[in-house]
Each structure stands twice: as C-alpha cells, then as structure tokens.
Length: 219
Image (cartoon, rainbow, N blue to C red):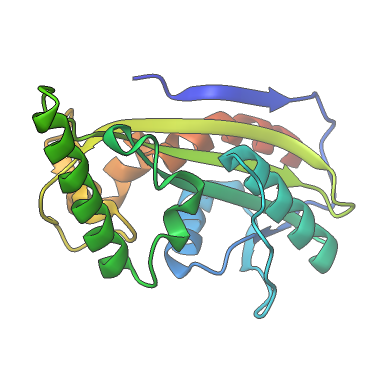
C-alpha cells in the first residue's frame, strides 16, 4: 500500500524554542493517539485551548489541516500540529470525505448512517449489474505551524481497507469498528495501539513527519 500521496517540507535549522507542541484538536482520542506517537521526541504535548473552534472550510484534508494548524499556533503562540483525517468510501463517491466528523452527531450515529448509505449504494450497483463494492480509504493530512502561523511541514498518509457490515472491536474511535484492514485481518478497533500506529493512516503520515520534526528539535 502506498503510505503517502504528498510530502512537503523545506530544510529548516533546529528550533531552540520547540519544547511544547499543541495538538490542534478537541478530540480526546486523537490527542491520546498523537501523544503516543510523539512519546519519543521529548516534547510537552498540550491540547488546543478549550472553546477554540476552527471552521474547517477546506475542500481537502490537507487544506483543513493547514487551517487548523495556523489558527491554533496563532491563538496559543506555540508550535501547533494539526491533523485532518477522514474516510472515503468508493461506492459513495468518496463520501463522507472531509465531512467524516460531521456526518452525524455521534460515533454510533455516524457508523449507522455510513452503513445504511453503503447498503443503499450497493443495492443500486446490484440493480445495475455491478458487484457490490465495500472498499474504502482512510486519509490523514498533518500540518505543523510555527508560532507565527507559518506552515513548516506537511505530509499525507493513507490506509486502504473495506467497510464491514457490522462493527467489530471495542478500541479506537470514529469509524474504527467498521474499517477492516485485510493485511491484518482486523478492524482498527480490534488492533492494539502499536499495530494501528504502524499501519494506520495517521501513523503512516506521522512516519513521514517524524524525521523532519526530529530535525527541527535538533535530535
């Protein structure tokens, strides 16, 4: 599987003041996941300030990651790392896409809507003489902004899989219980943190970001 579709970074000298990194998210699951991924970099990880809302008006995951990184860096005066990620389902024309987090009001409701929409789409495919298609792709775009609100690093990672007919597993968050990765035989919600961190879209994006972030830290 291709781990990245884009990687953008200029050479930067080490940054002496990069000791605190604000995760540009209010999602507790994402913050825990990033804290685990960043554990070896000797950074103080903080969540974005409570009440800070960034309107995600970008048409792509990368655009939204940039918007969030810039806004949180400027609001806090700290380095900020933003992620915009989501699920694109082939039979749904790439939906829910950048609307993944806003597809419904809760994780169970989002999953229920997704499964209903996919069932409907595949019934239409069958009536048209086509085979059902449950293939899907998770994408994670990461953007790192400095305290001035300048995006310094950008990467994008992907994980290919399929949508199950019913949830499996109790871990993870979001669409994890229905996103099945054939190479592991598990859903994201069934994987341990180490495996998900290695093969998941966010982990793959972070693997591209990590060496450049380490270079900024002078490590």
